[in-house]
Length: 378
Image 1 (cartoon, helix red, strand yellow):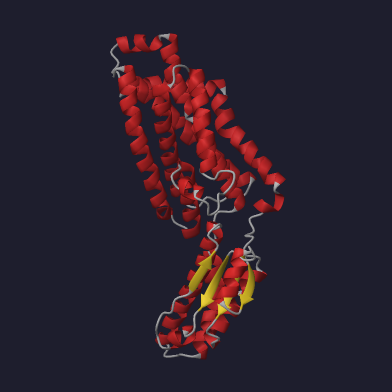
Image 2 (cartoon, one colour):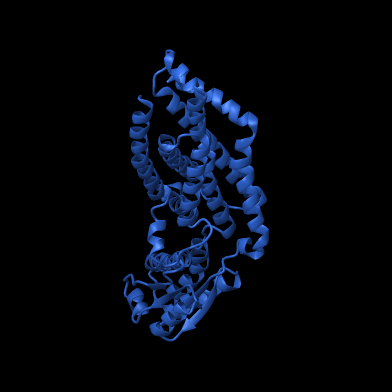
C-alpha cells in the first residue's frame, strides 16, 4: 500500500500544480451556479413559493382552531393558504396547479381528539412536485405533533375542551413552521452542480492511468518492486481525494456567497464521500475500455451529461416514466440525502441515500475491478 500512496502523492501534487482541478472542480461549478443565482433572481431568495389547500370536513372547534393557527405560515411567507369545501374541488385545484398539496380534516377529527384518540390528517399532494408534497406532509406532521403535545399537557393538568384548543393553536405556529424547512432553491442548484462536476473532477485519476499507459511508464513502474494493483489504486486515491476536496470546498464557499444550507456537516461529508466513490467506480469502467486519454474524456463527458440530465440536475421530469429512471442515478440520491438532512435536522436522515450510493459503488466498482484486471493483467 505504501507504493500506491507514493504514486498517489506524486500525481496529486502534479494535478494541483497545473491548476486544472481548481478550474474544473471548483471554479466552473461555482461560476455556473452563481450565474443561475442572478439570472433567476428571486428563485434563490430562500422563500418557499408554495400554495397549500385545506379542507375542513369536521367543522369542529379544534379543526377550526388549527386552521386559524396556520394563518401564521401565510403571514410569515412560508406558504399561501387556500380553503376548499370538499376533497373533489381540492383535487381539481391540484391538477390545475393552483396548490401543491391539500390537508384534509376528516369528519370526526375534533371528537376523536376530545375523546383521547389520535386522528389522522389526510394529505393529497401533487405527484409532479415531490418537494411540494414533502413540505405539505411536513406541515401536517407539525399539526399532529402540536395536537399530541397539547393533549398530553391537558391530560397532565386534568383539562379538556377549550384549553386544549387554545394550546394547540399556539403550539402549531412553531411546530408547523419549523417542520417546513427544506433544501432551498439556491442550495438545490449548487448541490446539483457539485454532483454534476464531480464526474469530471474524478476523471483526472483515470486520465493519469491512461497517460502512464500511453507514455510507456506503466510497464517500467510494474517492472520494479511495485504490486500490480498499486498503480490503479493510486489513481483511484488521487481521483477520490481531488473529488472530495473540490466538492467540499465548493459547498463550503457557497454557504457564504449564496447563503446555501446543506444540513448537518457530518451528513454533507458522508454524502460527498459516497458520491465521489460512485464517480471513481464509474471512471474505472471508462479506464478499462478507453484506449487513450482523449477517448476517455469523450466517454466521461457523455456519462457525466447523461447522468446529470437523468438525475434532475437542471430540470425535473415530473410524474413521467423518466422520474423512475431518475431514482437510479447517484445525483438524485445525493440531493435527496441533503434534502433529508436539512428537513430532519440530523445526518442520520441521509443514511438511506448514502446506502444507495454505496450499493451503486459496490456493483459498478466490482465490474471495473474485473475489467481492469483483464486489461492490465493484474
